[in-house]
Length: 116
Length: 108
Image 1: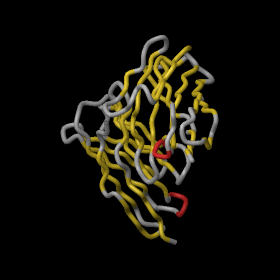
Image 2: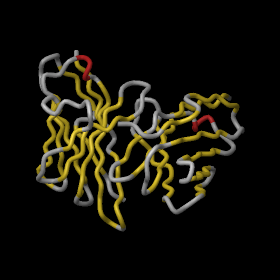
Image 3: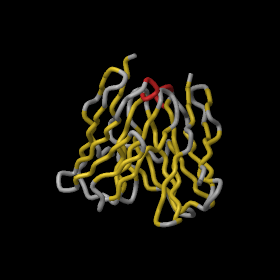
Image 4: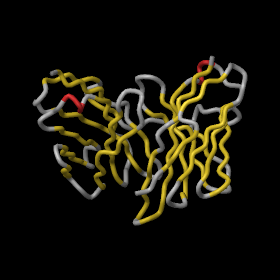
């Protein structure tokens, strides 16, 4: 089946630095990609939706200048956490939607970000 | 935004018993999905039920959907220690929104 990968799987960075997370769809071209954030013992919160070649649509309360999303191709989306702070430490999960028979959505394995 | 609400938030049962988790949501959906997540790990897709379906089975899993009440339930029969995890319902309209989840603990 379709596979979505994320890189890196975990990252530790210092406060004030920026971190880029990649999300790739390996088998299919994704019509849409989604980014979620999950804090410990909580559920996944949708951060933004992006379509290839267009600006991402951010959910209410998500700072678009802090969480930069680039969807340069149908197989790659990146999330950059700018000027990271310890409160940005979280599990970030991307998801890609494919049009195969109808629309199917697959999730990546997640990236654990720790900001020190 | 978060649409689904799971009930209960946490559930502990003895191995071999059945576990039932409920999910309520607010708006129209195309389908509803259930996922499992072990602590600190990624999501595992369990089952998808479409809006025109009422019940679906997969192994020890049984999912129901009542669109008139905007609710779904997940039943795990004959629970095992390996079923210990968090379970999330997720509604799919044009994007997938997760509920708050149920933490299931199977006691040996």
